[in-house]
Amino acid sequence: MVYTDATVPENGIIWRVKGQLELRCYPESTDAIKKSISQTFETLRSQMKSESLVFTVCDSSVVIWPNKDVYSPPGEVSSNTLCEELQRWIKGDDQDTGKKASKKKMKKIVTESVINLCLMKEVSRPGPLPVPILTRMLQSGHALHTTLPMDCVIRSTAHQPIGVACNHLLDALTSQLREMEKAALQNMKGTTLLVPEPYHFLLPEPRGLVTIVYPAGVPDSQLESHRKELHGRFDLPEDRPYFRKPNAFRFPDQVHKDGYLRNPHQVLTHPSLDNGKLYLVQGVYSYHHYMQDRMEDNGWGCAYRSLQTVCSWFQQQGYAERPVPSHREIQQALVDMGDKQASFVGSRQWIGSIEVAAVLDQLLGITSKIMFVSQGCELASKGRELANHFLTEGTPVMIGGGVLAHTILGVAWSETTGQIRYLILDPHYTGAEDLQVISDKGWCGWKGPDFWDQTAYYNLCLPQRPRIF
Image (cartoon, rainbow, N blue to C red; front, side, top):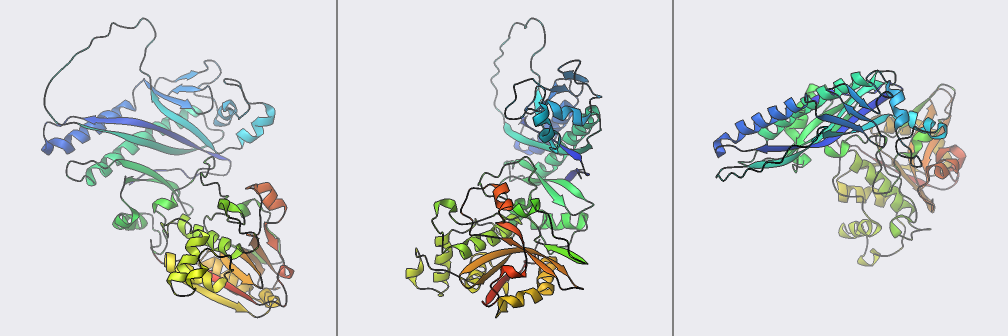
């Protein structure tokens, strides 16, 4: 159920329009419900051509009537205004309503890749208001009422006129209503309508960003046949999830409500090695470290935090539906499997790579490979194994040795020279979620072979990606 492709080129812009449309239909009988729903959707699609349709640009004073070619503020914004010029009207946190961006803020705004719009409908007209007329009709019958959550995206370049972009948005809205109609009719439970909901997914290049409509309230476990059809349509392998709901694309301007940083390694400058290549974690993870969640685990909880980061990866890639486990839940899992005594729950005892692998299996059904290194100096020779892991599995690696645990997010490795650098996410950080501090101070950063204790043993837990879709 794909209705648009929004691959964003370099320096491109995503236009996203969101809003609610009321679906109201009054079928003559239960047998006529589907026909009545189709007629109502047809009416909604015709409204996409109405002169009363309005786009308001979020955080700005710009209002657009796309079907009337009318723009406000008049004389300053028109259909020929370029997308990059429109961005200058979007306000920053310290700007006054209706004023253009200051030069200081403009740089930040212009580099944003998303323009958000709100879908609205004009209900009043200029001039005197007509006398209201109230009519009351009494009749028996059936009624169906729900709200459709419209959410469309299209792509543009920075130099494209906004009039062209708005026309593409109108086409996308019409297409989305058509796909919502299909989803609504195909997933009806008797006379119950499951609200169709749009989800955006970022597929491997060159496919880009596509949108799928799923019925609300239906878990991923019941959508397997539909996902299989989508994998075939886009020629995607069936051993990795692309269309599970947790895989939904998060736009650059969306804030994660849980407060955890995602993928802090993406702001780093990668090392340059002679004939070296990068092998990095694939997908999204959360950074879990000491003292989060009101948990005072400084000095003993580093392996727990590394495990939480690994679990977040499986959750955010759609492999697991359960939340990231707490320290207590991790401990209880080890007790449940008979690895620890009951007194372990609530304690401050350390865990290692073997326990991490056991918990992943117990809670998520994830199997892991264990790499044993008798001395830290041997890690420098493990470039090929680690590179192959990130190339084929792409999961974060938990490494424990001595009294410390870390997360390895990738390696830079040269097959010809043997040079290697490790991308380390350090769970021992105790500060706030400040990306600049974390990157500048090396809490997430590239480390050389001397980072490891050369004489200590290390165990590496390499989680394996499930072969599911």
